[in-house]
Length: 485
Image 1 (spheres, rainbow, N blue to C red):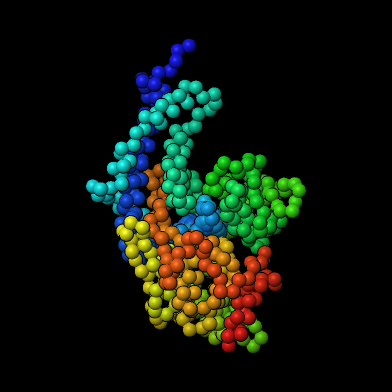
Image 2: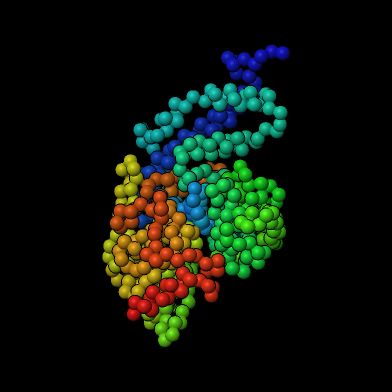
């Protein structure tokens, strides 16, 4: 038996050569795109408007919480290890991750979209990529192709795996590569239509998918899933070793189809099995109503994500409610994994007088921008309470931090997710996405949210049923406003 030579390129190695050259070309393209993102991604508010998600989703949105459909977050940042972005399991960007990562919650993340300008300068970071020595890569895959006793991956899987592994070397949970089939689903989610089990989810510390909260009257809720449940297998396949996006894609699917989930529930000796028929539903961006408390009324507005129409929808809701002379406003951002940066600023401006909303900076100094609010908007005078929880990420934290530092109102609830970075989202030629962290944001008082999130002024535990009879956070908000009269 002849020993394989390390000095000559075997036929199998030559078959891998086209793949390698393609990978090098793609790396060069990505490097150029990243460079463009640093300089061009957020040059003006128009750029910010296009951005936002993670879960965004990007938002975003991602630690961001995500509804097992993924809510795009605010792609400005959101997600636990990847951001607890509130994840909706549906066809809505990052509602499944939007509690954001540690992959969103759906997180959501606050994102800056690709402006399509891929120009680079002579000192582009691509120079370091050109110097990569890929001889070991050739050597390894040549030997694998010759000797591996099993089925080899498709070329695309090999390429995407190599890209994903290289991105992981950055040690940033919000800079990530998303394969075409998953990226397409996330883009579909941006339309607001969701097809899945209907739950807010996020990655758990041990690699499972945690149910943050089933959405009321949706399949997960009706099947008996609870907050804190951990999904450990989907259709009999363990989630171990899979990315958060891959698990979400497996959970979601066409309306009327069934997904089998294996769940670990604290206090139960055995794993629980659930067969859930997927449903298509829409997650409204804004929900609003007038709450009656004795002889007084309160304006209640719940914003589920900072998507493209967030400012317009919130403004319309406030216009209707304020016409009825409420005593105050309760603005609910619980399980909101984020969205677009421009929407975070615009919605904040509705409630804040003239002042700073946030600072955005990059460590290399290319980005250094301050975002302001102006006087004269419709919700600047009435008493204000903002409700937050662990699923509030990215753009939600921008809003809560701005309200808190400007002493505009009280923050009630639980510690927020803690996503304080901005991502530039690039849609690549094959339909995949690259989300690159290009900057960090800081509250008006120069606080970074990345480590601990926003600490409420009044801490109250999140109930299992938001808006239900036992919603002590909402009760505390009502009492706070009534007591301030």
